[in-house]
Length: 320
Image (cartoon, rainbow, N blue to C red):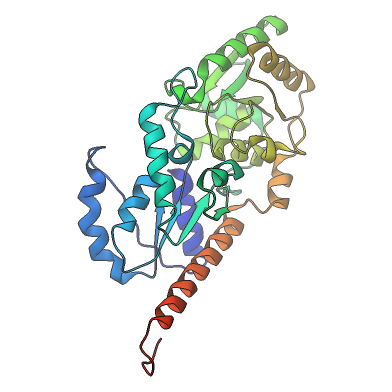
């Protein structure tokens, strides 16, 4: 949930007061356990911004304050198994979340693909921003020295290999093929259980990043890699093709090990970084710019709620 934490800090930097209710507990009951707290805290705020579909249902269980829901990815796109097939349970959850989108005050999604899922409900397409102070180009040799990596060539895998939705077997096959092409081994480094502060060092220490997921919304790792000018080789998923459009030494390829390997070989042979950072800045995908878009949505929701309340007041009664 690092992206949510970044968003909270960016909103506070703009002067927005943000109280956080972190949902903890047993997976099947933690939302119900938080319900009394939501109802108790709701009167003290202007609106509730829920992140993830189940959190949206929790927030909507009160009517005192308007609700904004940010869908995060698989809550609208489903959760795939190891073969990329969306599970039956997640299809049911998606159906429930599409219904919930109709009863909240505003919907935020990460990509146009997700917006189409909730249609005809109008959704605001607002990808997560990037902390450009944290994610920045750093000398690769320095990063490898700090990480105590031996000499070699390193490729980053964007995710946890044990998570079926990340498609690790494809990345593994592609790197093995690319290693054979080079005649020297390439080390595939998973981005698993890496503290956020160290992620930029991993990105700068590697020569490219592979994204082979079955389902994504607007993957943060792609934009973070762009901020570090790290070349990205990705399969067509989420809004990756849109994000990488016009970015040098980055490519979206079919989900085929040989094709992914060929793209990786080309990127490593060129020995060039990307121009992703400049593209991110031009598109306004830094955290402060995204926070301003979120605040404008808050303002519209609050104004609409107040206007609706004013319309229901008896004639002659003052409104505020």
